Image (cartoon, rainbow, N blue to C red):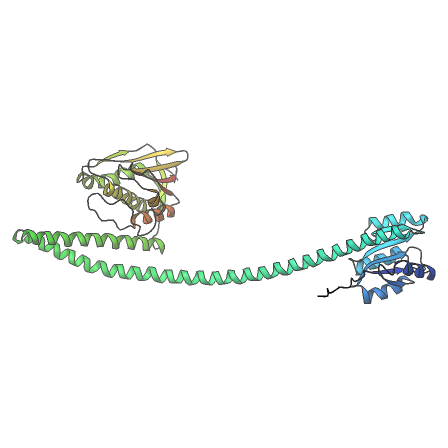
Length: 402
């Protein structure tokens, strides 16, 4: 198969000189290497450049010419066609003028007359290489600009689409929360009525058989579980829809911790669990009293549920630098690594189960996390499987008068 030979395109060089003999000599000496265009004045050179500037890599001009010198020509060339390289030919008496022109960036190189063909060819080749590099850089820069503009348009378009989707999701989430609220309230009302009827039936408990009493207890337990679930769903719904108005101000956390622990004394006694409470003086932090109470209620309730009988739960406040930490530490089964990953998620069922048959909705810790974060606090759990769990809530210290 015959190979296709691509003819190499010669670089185009424009040579300017007011002496015809010099024009003829240059063309004869370089026509095999370059495509040579000639002009006998600066004005003629500018006319040629007007038509051919996209093809011309280098302009070479004699310095001393009537009407327009080489440097004066190159001032115009630089302004009109800045990529084209400019070489001036000069006698020794003009060298300082040329050096000044080079300093201004109007001339790439100068060659003294009479010029040497090989020396001039090396200079022209270097100028052509510099020209090609300029053009490549300009092309790359233009391509990069276009790519950036295209990317910016895509980013703007994508941002608008994401904003639109986000607005739709917010609207859907609002509708979802509203629907959950309606459903939960509608469920709560009949459950309360059933609970009321059960309480009335208990007045005649002595007339019931042991089996009937067991059924009533089962119904009551089921009602309690459903009411707990509905309450937590409503709490979470209120948190997510930001329906609650927080009153953040300094509270003595030790005082609130003691009050919360006291409410669980009877529940803990049923499993022979001891609540060890430790508090400190001057333990003020900015919280919402209701939220903080619910956080402690959830954490202490969980600790009691998941603790075996005859164990202890340690509830205490301690300082850690500029923060106050509230710890609820149990002696239960602890958490494995998989449990830790999903600990604060919604409706998460952990491997550990309540030890006394208590009910767990899987919502309590997600509510705790949301409430703590809404109060600008932090919550986490330190636990080793088989060695209990230590739930920690942290808030920045505050002065009593803040």
